[in-house]
Image 1 (cartoon, rainbow, N blue to C red):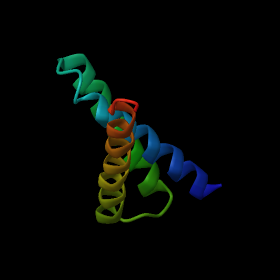
Image 2: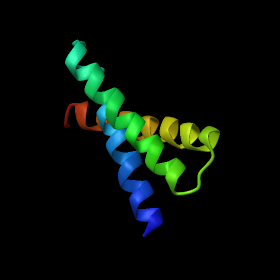
Image 3: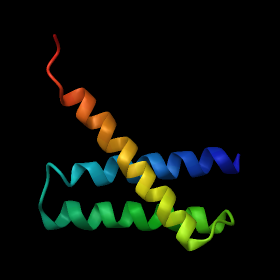
Image 4: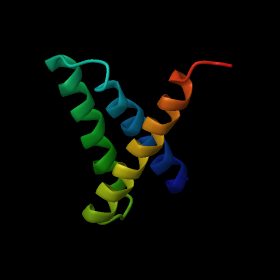
Length: 76
């Protein structure tokens, strides 16, 4: 269960962060910051150290960005 919660938190934070590539307004930035902060809080509450949580978050952003780039490619 803990692993599922971590996965969902990281996926939400990664996908929210990718939105910043498209939206550059303050309300979006604040919302994304809240999602990312909550994800780190959940990871920390599950026993993960801060450095590890931040590293996992960075990885989730890379995955979400790569996924977004694949869906943006024109279809052949």
